Length: 426
Image 1 (cartoon, one colour):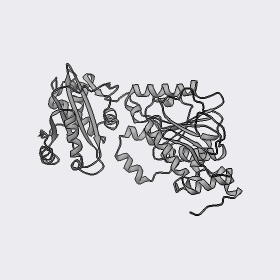
Image 2 (tube, one colour):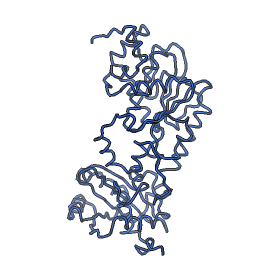
Image 3 (cartoon, helix red, strand yellow):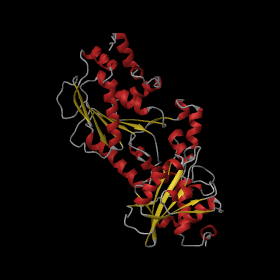
Image 4 (cartoon, one colour):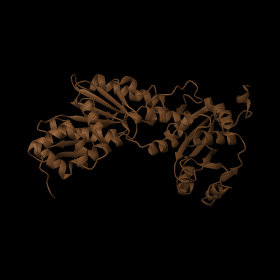
């Protein structure tokens, strides 16, 4: 394998423009803007926050390339990378390990340190490099979840990357848990004079960004990273409220939201008379939705899943969930496919019942889903994408498959009032 000789001029260029390290390993979508982000986040002597839209290569640039760049010039530092779930943190650390295996990175570190970087410790949650000459229990880079056990460890840099995610959007308890994790980092974990860094995207007006240092922000119009075609595609696949939050970085007022503050609980697995509803997807940019529910005294426990594939590709998945929840009967509208999906499910051993939909969708959602909203106990493991559709529901805006599916199932099996009582105010 050929080696590259890095001159002092090139090393100085990489010091000034860290995104070019990304170019060395094929990350050529990184730009000078990412260099500005990396240097803003990593070089500050105070806690910093940077908020940018989804799809802006924040993790690739700031976290992955940023960590390599920082260690190139600060080899003794101890870095902690924290993400919302541990699996994502471990994945990020694994990616950084792969970059360090590339010969061009080895040559770069050889030029600066006189030796190629070797991993003297390489675990799922820790890397120690040979260029780290100080002996500490902390590695060159360690990784954790936001609720991980890092008490007693000390770092020069703690980078929190996407510790606020869709779950924080749909769950107040999740938001409060993330906030507590941030407070713990800022007050008890980071040493005086050391730095916490926060990088990510907003999800809710009361999410953990309110307890982070005030961020600098970059929406999609400012970065110009996404093409208009990509923006149009993303608009078609999400609610206008969530698009505004994730890409415009603007929180919409939720004062007029139809559905607020869902009640969450654990799904009781031994419940009998579980029924389901399938809002099938056939093509295009629409989503599909699958809902299961069962009575719990005067309440209803309910769980929902969303999907993007054609229903023919999801039959095995639907059947597996049908069996897992001990579903007795699954309902679906026959208008779009003349009963095709019903027959497909029956062929695969499920009790499937079709119906003709003649009610206006908005009236149905308000009458039935809104009508039973205070009685619904949403399973904690409801698909966040599904729940987001419900909480962001606005008449006439798509995607609305999740609230449509939930309302349809409630109407079929869990209605306790005249369908239009709630609309008339009675």
